[in-house]
Length: 220
View 1 (cartoon, rainbow, N blue to C red):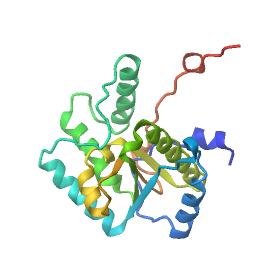
View 2: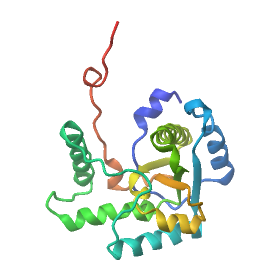
View 3: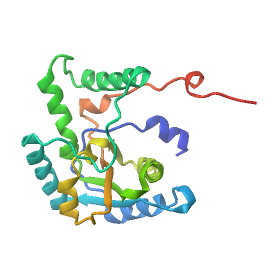
């Protein structure tokens, strides 16, 4: 499949079947994702794949953390508040999701429950945590983004669906403990993945993209 076709078909999936991705296929995909470019070939990505009992343990611990009322304590700066056109696009994305699942704008409880699904990995059979040494800061974050996009597209080529989740970086402590990560390592974000539940209404969610005229400037 051509990359243009994959980009057109790929979308964030928030409901999965319980079918696992075969281990050898997953290893092959991750092997090819290592070809992703990085600044000065630093290759900062330290990827943690969780499945089975480890994933279920993290799901339980995330729920306990959230129910305790704990505030997010991300390893990296997630404090940016969107304004202007970026805020409008954020609202547009939320509206597309909640409209797809029939949640009214004023239904705060239903929206919270939908948000909670992030830390349940949307019931995906697998999840990935994208980590790197904290000192790498924004340059490392750029490289992790490139790596994650590369990985997502290779997965799509093999019929594996995914959802990038900043939410999975908001409560790093349970993850660090469960995965025994060193203190110098930070969790930037995560991604749930598996095979899409094609019958789930939530997977009909689609978002718009900005026009080329507004997003790109040409200089001769």
